[in-house]
Image (tube, rainbow, N blue to C red):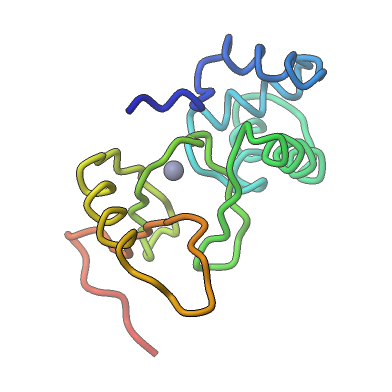
Length: 151
Ligand SMILES: [Zn+2]
């Protein structure tokens, strides 16, 4: 299955903005440029990226833009384990590897694994609830380091 909702290219992004009646402002383009590089990022990370590339922007404007684009479905919200709001450029179905050491996400595009889990869960009934979707996040840490210390 193709991930048609992926707005990774700049042209796709401009089209998405236009279809929502938004202008492709320098600010939005700079933020999307950073998001394409970072993949998954918080407003702080996006601001840091823009500033380190010679741009000027406040965290508040980055956050507002990211939130607006997420509400329109151009990005996806993700609250990380360290309680930060992250945004994901990939809005298609995918699995996340979450590195608990660096608090970073990596996309796992494994259609087969996703299908296996979805098929198994479709057969299950959870009393009093109806399943809306499945969000798979695999917790991990870099294999060249020791396991994180537990408290
Ligand atoms: Zn992702």
